[in-house]
Length: 289
Ligand code: AMP
Image (cartoon, rainbow, N blue to C red):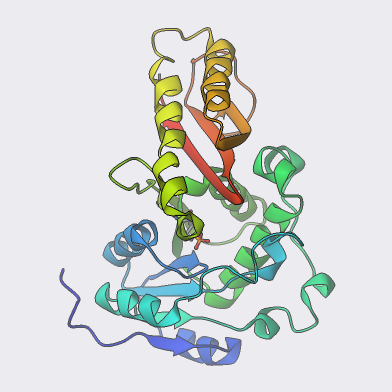
């Protein structure tokens, strides 16, 4: 449905205002959590949730708890007016965009935290970004508590995050459905990310190499299903030949549990993080035998 003529979303900045609105909602409520700087990746999740629900909330909150002390919390792109217009076009009913003090009134270091199990939260991204998934799980649980959605969609682009959220919902008996949405890419394969805005023109030309290497490696899984470790090693060598990309990890894991796998005998995910200059990018591809 074309919703471009729909009214502007209501914007709530406080939990109280949001809850007053929530009480009036009839029918199902879908929810997409974002840090703003919306791009076509976010928009695909919003459109899907719009189709599936009677009502739709998007949150825009740059969560300080998930940024490390040397990370880009201060410089993270903030484009509220553009985000609002995009949400209007997609027929979003309500935007919840609290300030930091609303979510962490006693400061982010003085709140109760939700800690994912180490096998999900401390490997891969969690190894390179200590505390990251505790920051994510804590804010997402707070948002679920405030918004009380019936369902939510998280992007497969942040694959480990999707598993962390699904696991939290299951472990804490939260009453909502969590779905994954496919990764949206630029024409040259680069996964869309708010952080792509940090890339210089030169770096932007190099960045699609990440997806190219992932595709190369995963494309060989079917023909050599017992040689996953060797194939991933070959992928790492491809990265090392590209001097301007600094690989942090390239690993193949069970797509449901993130356990290490040696053979292509189940659904797997090939995950990577790499830095181009100071810009850190993540990506992944999923494959089923
Ligand atoms: P963020 O604003 O980066 O916290 O992302 C908000 C949501 O959008 C998360 O569920 C992300 O996984 C999802 N997302 C980000 N980039 C993409 C993309 N390229 N394709 C699909 N979903 C995405």
